[in-house]
Length: 584
Image (cartoon, rainbow, N blue to C red; front, top):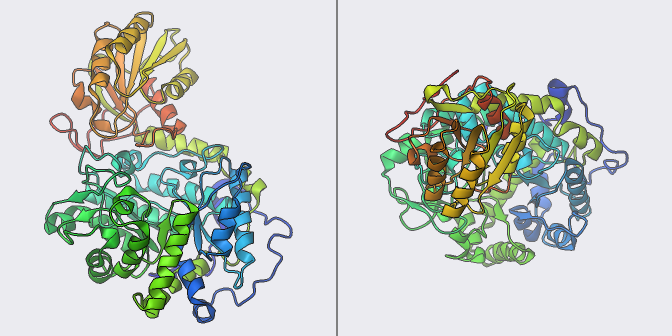
């Protein structure tokens, strides 16, 4: 039984959300939904009774899709759906909303052409809006830490509603957000700005707001990474993190957001590939019965679906192998295995589960419980009634002008003016002054945003790496001498490379007005505390190839005089406390 299931409408439909948000309605493409379902649509018990072992374990695997040269799902993806009988997919990154909708329709047609014709749950990793995976034509939203800086649950809800509207228009039902991790470690290399902040109360409040908003808008929310990834110093994509804090710290700091998410009715929770020694000193949470069954289901009383993080991440694959780990995770309490590798890894996941069922290692009653949760989600979120979407409507909904204006307002509310000695900021947007934008990551994109605001000419310079050499710093200084003012953008996803700190110091030594902007973590100023002006935008995650133009534009607006709204959602040790933020 889904938690709070009586509070969900039988079918949560997208048109209601869109009409309220942008005055658009969604038309189902002619003919796509004409075929009647082959069974009574929302009858999980009846469906379960008709399923073979192979069909059941297929529902327990969420597989990443693979594409052909045309950007559409390829033959291996069809085989995953029809031969392996998988129940859900996470798409590789379709480029545009129109393509994403056609993509979703194709995989759903393949799913319809199976013995039971069960629809897929189509999922995405949309932490800062659908642009997280669908990069063109969608609405970039602030990262979670930006929403934490804005301090307003209404902003968090609005971000979830926009994400949900775009996601449903493109055929997605399931979002792997919000991030419920409390980022207490400034050197955390993988969570960072993906977290709302370091304060459990703030993270809990915004997690609650987004879970409720997603559910109301018809998208499955998935708070992650249980029981917390915020105090790690290892990226679980690359190694196996462990945390050594005591149980009292776990209860006081890291569990409250997950408790809040459960109380808000979260229908899915994602596991962490992290060893939490206070609960299980031997196994990461994903593989630990003590964590998933004992803590999450037992102590916290969670009754919804548990999905693993990607099982091909090195934390799991290099230590246990995906085949063995798949069975271990289900025995620990997971319902859905996220298989994000090549087609062969999908085969291994399904075969491992099927072998375990047939050998008795996995009791059929245990498998039935997981499959029932999957089927109940498909019923609750309208997967049977609305199998297909309109690519034309997806193009109209995603990235529409109303959403983009709302996102920019969120971005300005998030942008934090941390320091402004001598009133270096704001720069005069009406002056014909020459502005140099220097940096190490996404400098051209930030410079474009500055050019949209400034009346005078804007030039940009970017180092070849995130640790500028002496020669590169000398070149930046040479260019600064030809400018009237300088905006220097630093970026870190952990410790700031020394070359960036030296770059800021060298530019300030030119005597030109210099403002620094941290485009990743907000802690950068600790490495160059003498800078006169400093802004935190929280724009860039550890995956720097993803560009959040909303936050770059918001930062440019603030640098040139728009009132900043943000307050630090983390403390900067020895310099600025949690909650600090200046105004003009």
